[in-house]
Image (cartoon, rainbow, N blue to C red):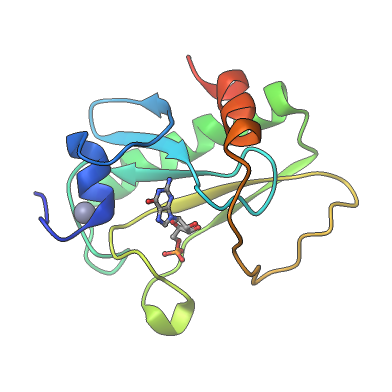
Length: 137
Ligand code: 5GP
Ligand code: ZN
């Protein structure tokens, strides 16, 4: 269920800080520490699985439904014009954290993001401001 070496399991356990913006019985969503665009968040199942190859059907279903919920919120509350839902499975596919996650990346008309993006540290205040708009069902 949980992997002691996994940073996302540590976030789930409250051992590492994260700005949580949504949760349900099987998933949580929190802000990405190095956002590709304003409002970039990650949805993960509470149960540890490495990637989409390994995850069970119930967790996969709950995770994509949670991503849809957050994607809708991103459009309504942040004024995004579109959303990229992105999942990487395996290092060759750019996965760097090996706990299944779906990136919810708000897209704004004419934003400069090009995939794959090169992550760089986010501005904590700006991340917190976007989180405030997203948090709470
Ligand atoms: P991946 O490259 O595996 O698809 O995505 C991992 C994501 O996790 C990256 O976008 C990265 O910025 C984010 N990330 C890595 N470490 C942390 C962390 O400690 N806290 C948060 N909130 N995000 C993290
Ligand atoms: Zn984990």
